[in-house]
Every structure is written in C-alpha cells, then in structure tokens.
Image (cartoon, rainbow, N blue to C red):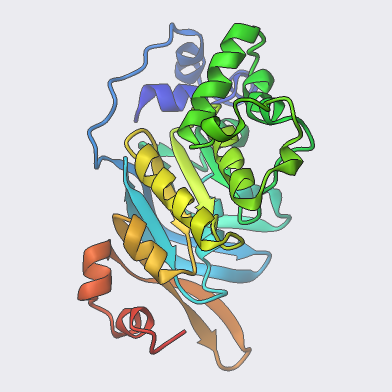
Length: 300
C-alpha cells in the first residue's frame, strides 16, 4: 500500500471512530510523500467488479489494470456500462441511491471501497470532467480558484499562481488572461470545457476521468481537447469514455471495449468488459470477434 495515498484518503473523523491505532498514527505522522511511481505502474486494479443499482446488475465481472501516465479509453455501444465503470473509479456512484459495488477496486494498492476510506478525499485525488461543460456562474478566475479555496488556500499570490498554472495546463491562458474577471458563462463551448479541465487540475489530482468530454464540441474544439490530453498525460493519468472510435485510436494508449449481455427472458441488459489491451492491438488485431465487429463498424 502507498502510505501517502492511504493517509490522504482516510478521513480524520473516521480515524477517530473506526480506524485502528496504526491508521490514526499514520494520520498525525509528518507527511512523507513517496517517490513517484515509474511510468506504466498500476494506478487502478479492478478484479471481478460488478455494479448494482438496487437488485439490477448494471455491469458484471470487470477486471482491468489502468496504468500511470497513460490515456485509457473506454469504448462500446450505448448502455454497455462505460460511464458506470468510470464513475466507480472515483466513487461517484456512491451518490446514487441503491448503488453498490461488488469485487475489488484498488487505487495505488489501497482498497478504494475500504470502510476507512473517505469518498470525499478520493474525489480530491481523482478528478472528473463531465460530458457537458459546466462552468460555475462566476468569473473565470473564481472558477479555477474555487477548489483551492475550498481546500483552505487563501493567499492571493498563491491563488494567482494556481490559476495561471491551471489555465496554462488547460491550454486556455493565452485566450483569457486579459479577462479573468469576466463571467465564465460567456466562454465558447470548447473554451468552457477547457476551463472545466483547468478547474479540475487546480486541485492537483493524481487522475483525471473524462466522460465524453468532446461529444458536444465542434471538430476544432475537439482537436484542442485531444492535444491537451497528450500534453498533460506526463503529469496525470487519464481515463476517457468516448463514443468516437477514431478519437480513442488517436489519443489513447490502451482501450477497453465494453458490450451488452441481454437476458432474453427479462430483456434486461448488463454491461460487460469484452476485451482490454493496447490501442494498437485493439484496433489492428483484436482477439474477440465482438471487438473486431465493433471497431470495423459491423456492429454499433
């Protein structure tokens, strides 16, 4: 287990109420950040994961490893569970009444759904960018500074530094540096999505999850987001859900293809992971015939 990750994700309140003395001691010990893992090290390791909403099994038996400083794409037809699995990686499904996860999901070796793990702390380390740009009705500056302020950063010089760095990482600084105090709602769709990415990066996450971030954008804005992903993957691990197979082929290092299992008796549909591998393999020589049919357009 990565001690820093475990320390960060266990809340102090839980430590006092639930965790054993070893966890409590780790929380008050001086912070010691381990050396960064080598590129390609496992960030997420999922084994036998099934996701339920009440009694309905939405996704079944997903096992895969997501690697550091890579872009991993989830592809597949509508309803196959891509976004459901993505939301499992930062416990967003916890917010859905009746949702539960079976199986194991480890993040840097830490059980993501362990009883002592704080879902709020998980989401600080694992950020998410949604399908539709959702800037706050605030200025551009205040959008980016929102997360750092929530985390206790108050000094203007420090906030100025974070805002500029995040907007540069989001490839937006040159376009907005002279109007930081204007409303973020006046930005174009592509600019708004890059602002949302910058806002996510402002809290310095370890992982960025992206749920169809380009689906509402024009080709030029889509290209800008794709270029941005390539630029920031040296600092972040990225997982993207996309319906655009060409996009997956262009930007990702690894691709997971999901499909749907249909119960003919009840007509219920359950998502399943069909195949996972390097993007080159998945698009040039997939092992499973279902993958081959999907990537060649014979199955939608």
